[in-house]
Every structure is written in C-alpha cells, then in structure tokens.
Image 1 (cartoon, rainbow, N blue to C red):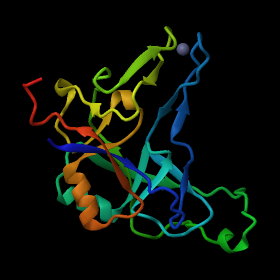
Image 2: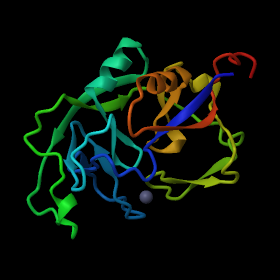
Image 3: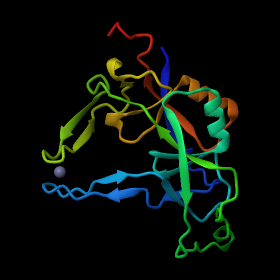
Image 4: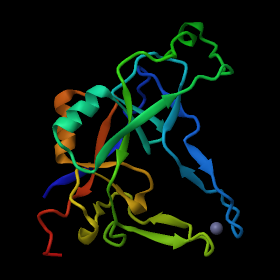
Length: 218
Ligand SMILES: [Zn+2]
C-alpha cells in the first residue's frame, strides 16, 4: 500500500515571509436563491508580501492551503523527477502603499521588497483531480442549495482514512480531491523528494492510501 499526503504549511513558523492573495479572483453573480457569492480563479496568481520577514521559503501559502507558491529550487527538482499532475505558472507581485505598520518597528522593516529581483517564483498548478468514496471516508455531503448545487461536507469521523474512488484516479503524483476543496495531495515519491531536498515551510500529513496496487480488486 502506498500512502498519500496532504501538503500543508509548517505550523507557527514565522521565520518566513507570508503572502496574501491580491486579485486572482473574479466575482461572479450571486446565486439568486441562496445569495452565495461565487468567485472564479483566473491566472495569474497575484500576491502581496506581508510585513514581518523578507525571507522567502520554498513553499509560501497565500490562500490557506489551497494556493502554493514555490521557489525555482522546488520547480527544477520536481521537473527533474518528472512528477505527473503538476505544472508551474507565473506569479505576479504587487505592493500597496496602505499596508498597516505593526507596532514593533524592528519587524516593520522586514518585507520582501519590489521590484522583486530574486530567483523566479511559481504558482504550483495541480492538473489532476479524483473523487472520494464518501462513505468509506466517514463523510457525507448535504445539498445546501438546489439552484447553485452548493454542498456542505459532514465529517462523521475526522480520524477516518480518506478513500479515493479507484476509477476516478488518474495515477498522478499530484492531485486534488473534488470533495476536499482546494487541498493539494501528493504521493510517496513527492514526499520523499521534499525530504531529500529539505524544502522549507512545508509539512505533509498522511491522509490515506492510493488505489494503485488494489486496482481491479475493489
Ligand atoms: Zn445557491
């Protein structure tokens, strides 16, 4: 059995520069029934660096765990490994003048300055997605709105292993799981590469097993 992992930021690490999303989304009309605002992601990824540090980690997380910005080091290592299901897109950076200054003057000066002249940064694009076997994963989906088909996940067992539907699995090293929002999941090979290269500000939480060896036996 081969495990898969959810990529996450390193908890409570303030060593590295943090970024926020700026732009990147286009607001679509609200659902006429439930009034929920839907937004669509449009390339390129636009970020703004926060005050606090000017050290860029190998992984930066501008939108919870759903958007990953990686260094050129990460891109070239992943390309060399020929990982499947992943691509790299440009990142744009902006700097608004009205950013609030923290009270601590020492950290106020630390910020990634623009124009940025370091090694290129990349938006990590995940190009494969699969489906969850909800029942086996201890979850269920409830339809919240009939008009926009919005659903809400109910987690019956938060410790349950996530089980992927084998027929939905494209066999890639990187993938998203449709029912799990924007999280990025990777196989053992990617995890090993991250360890070997010692990439910073990335953590991996084991969530389940890939349906590789078991294909056909389900
Ligand atoms: Zn709706």
